[in-house]
Length: 194
Ligand code: SF4
Image (cartoon, rainbow, N blue to C red):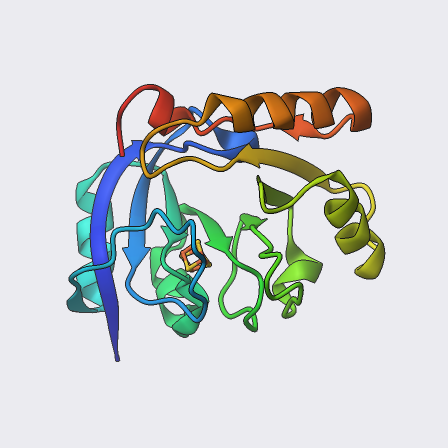
C-alpha cells in the first residue's frame, strides 16, 4: 500500500488548541472537496509506503505528528497510525469521511457547502470554522444539527493564501466576545512559516 504525500516537514502547529506546539507534519495529497478559499498547495505528490512515511517523520525528531492535507481520510490511515505509535498523532480533517486509524487529537474543519459529517465528528476534540463563509448563525445551526456540546469551537478568519485578512480577524473577534467561542488566528501565517 502506498500513500500520496505532498510533503513532510517540521513546524509549529498553527491553529487550534495546540497552536505553537512543535510537530512533524505529513501533508497528504488530494481532497474530496473543492473549497473556493483552499490554501493548500497540492501540485505534486510522492507515492510512499508506510515505512517510508514513518522513517521521514522520525527523522524530524518530533514527538508529535499531524496528519493533514488535502484530506487525510481519503486514505486508509489504520496502517500508518499503527506504525507511527508511540508518537502522539493528530488528525486534521474536513469531517466528511469515515474515520480510520487511532488518534490522540482530532480537529474537524466543517465546510458550509457540504454541511455534512462522517463519523469523525463523534471523535472530534475541536471544531474549526472558517469565517466567512461561516458566521454565528450558521455555526449555531451546525452545532444544533449534530447536537454538539462541550467541544472546543474555534473561529478561524479566512485568509488570502498566506496573507491574514484583518477584517475577518475582527469579525471572529466580535463573534468570540458575543458567544464565548475561541478566536484562532493562524499562527504560522502571523510568523511567516509553513
Ligand atoms: S476541505 Fe480543506 S483541503 Fe479540501 S478543498 Fe477544502 S480547504 Fe482545501
